[in-house]
Image (cartoon, rainbow, N blue to C red; front, side):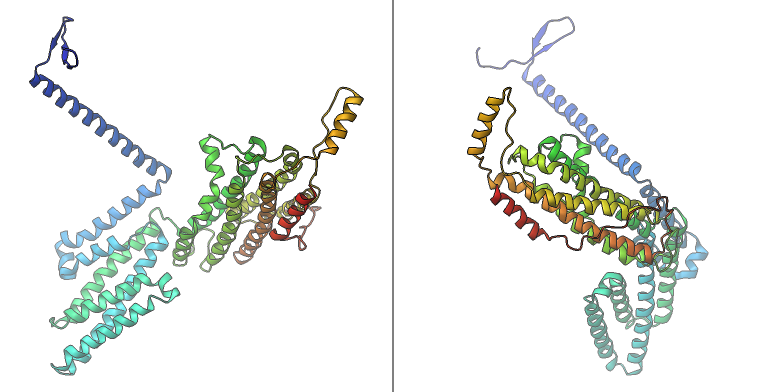
Amino acid sequence: MAGILEWRLTVSDGSSQELTPELRWTYRAWTSVVRLIVGLRLRILKFMEKIWKLAVDDPRRVAHCLKVATALTVVSLFYYVRPLYDGVGGTAMWAVMTVVVVFEYTVGATLSKGLNRGIATLLAGALAIGVHELAHRSGDKAEPIILGASLFLFASAATFSRFIPTVKTRFDYGVSIFILTFSLVTVSGYRVNQLVELAHQRLSTIAIGGALCMVISMLVCPVWAGNDLHLLIARNMEKLAMSLDGCVEQYFNDNGNASDDEEACQELNGYKCVLNSKAAEESLANFARWEPAHGHFGFWHPWKQYLKIGTALRFCAYCVEALNCSINPDIKAPEFIKKHLCGPCMRLSLHSSNVLKELSITTRTMRKSSTIDFSIGEMNGAVEDLQNALRSLPHQLPPPPTSSTEEHEVDKNRHNSVPPIVSIMEVMPLITAASLLIEIAARIESVVDAVEKLAGLASFKQAVDDKPDKPKRIEAHNKPTLEEQGQEGMKALEVA
């Protein structure tokens, strides 16, 4: 009958037979089960592929997992081995808890948490025992009042200290442990007779767990927060340089059309990594202060200066982001103006990115550059060329070429008699892009100053001067500001 769906199954002999309702439901169920199994298998494979990629991208993650497992296995011996268990009593679990909460990915983070936990536990325990002894000598009626009042006073004071910026940045975890330990000892000590022995056992197990974490973290495949911060700043300079190059080159060579190449798109959006790295930089700088001397970094290495370099890089990245947004492919700028500014803009972009790349090498190798002044001089010269190009913007189209002199004169007269009307909306993206390039060059000099200060504070090695006759840096003290450059561009448009 028309309109009725029939289910048929082809058998081995080539014939087909109609499925009964029971077989239909069975066939549907098996099909659903097979699809479910295949889909689950694909998801598991994709998940395993992501895990493998994480391990391959940074093998230190695998080493960190093994280090944490090793520390937990060692402290668990205080439960498995009877003599060790008898030595610490029933507080061996505090060593396990300490390893779980203290062991971090970097050495600085582990030292920060370990020392904060150990010092806070010691201070809180000693203070709580002293308060308990004072309350015990005051009599049974006054004891709970003194304990409650001391708990209220010290808990409120410690909590308020967490609002202090320095304490919040470096000792926030220690203050939390202080409040926790003081509260536990004060409250539990009211019903416990051997408070000093209990506090001693807990402090011993915490010290054992914390010391084990710090030793394993520093001696077995150490991950130094200071080295990660050092490399992060160097990589951000490279990403910003590639992003600046890609943005300008794409606009002037590809007419503003976005590239489909994934690698090119990542390089073009490299400035976003610089803008989003502030939290990572501050965290690494904070943990780096806790680390001992390692590699090329001494005890008093100027980690704060890296934050200043990162801030200067973000100021440049903001301009690169504005440059990327101002280049709108939907607004087609006049070709004669675009060709007029193409060369100076490309040169300034090239020299600016070269300065950033050279600063990246200087930071990474911790060796002063012998050509940085020459590169900055070229960048400032390119700035002056672009400023001159903005002042001399053409105000009319060039005469088109013709085959005869007479036709040339006619076309020339017609061209001069009816000057083209150039829309402000068409020209403004070019003027804005040029002005932003000049501002980026000015902000790159701030990065240069920050890196040079780091080189002085960290005692970077002297550069090998292969160019004794190199020109000195060209200072641009009289360089116009972004607003003045915009005004000059508007004047050029009025002339047009």
